[in-house]
Length: 422
Image (cartoon, rainbow, N blue to C red; front, side):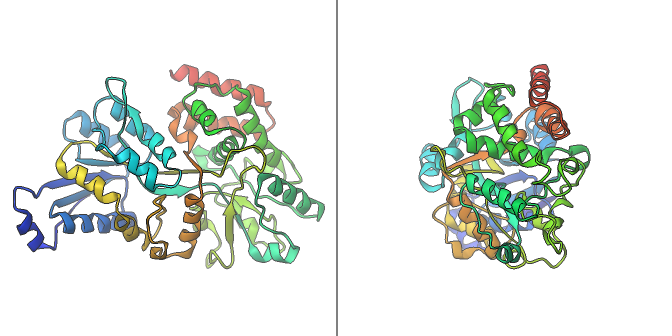
């Protein structure tokens, strides 16, 4: 799918002069409605710059960008759904470092700015690090969903710390009810929701640099820090009284069906942890902010780990160097580039300089407040690990764990799969 965005500002193009106008190609994973959104952003860039901007979206982007780069026909800018592939491309010499000053700009203008610099910094072909990736459009995973009316009827308050969350869970049980719905089922991807739980627990029990070492396997899955995070998830998932249907239902319940227990009367559960996309699977007609709402999966009130947020996001990188490619990255720094998509659907940003009134959806604005309040942002760990681990043994290992297998055995088996992938 290839579409051309032509500038409607002919006067600007004439003033710039033909020699300054370029054709710039952008490739990414967005098709359908999201493609329309990114086209609107690129249209604004085209109108301001006079460049002929062409976007190509594909649902097999990850495979196609490698093929194009190896053939010497890469687009000027590529939008990676995960930083892992971008890091590999940088190491192979397929990416161009971003302009000087970009690192400082990100630190100064993005909430948890150093986190975004770290996520976009990769080793080049000579082994030296440089900032290759610019994050634009982010998703948040550190969310807990609940029905405000159920909380109000029972006299419960939204917890502000992890310790309060556990106390609330215990109180709900004491009141004769069930606090959580948890479902790990997802067809061939069964188990992935548990990895999100473990990742959030790592960020709430360990400093961010320990999380990073885990992602790179500098510390193994058998490390006490990792085992502790899995067991912290187990405090919730392995407690029959805390989970709707008991622990035995966790692995067999589809993640798309799991949140529906919130809406039962009486409720089958009071809370459900899942990312920002889950409302797509709520009962038809449910209005977020009225019928159902969410709160930040709280950080520990003990220690000094700040307000960590787990999520995902797209990283923009230059794959075929040109002056216009650098101009596009500069445009993405402007509040306007963010506010255009903010007014639409499915967009969150760590940019602290945007006008939050630009959000067309109050739910997105509330999620964005969580993102802006983050002291640390970390990308989904399983997406950064080798496929055999992050989309394989980590998933199946979590299913084995909730099924009763000893955590030591589970972590040893996951580590063995990582060793085999090296």
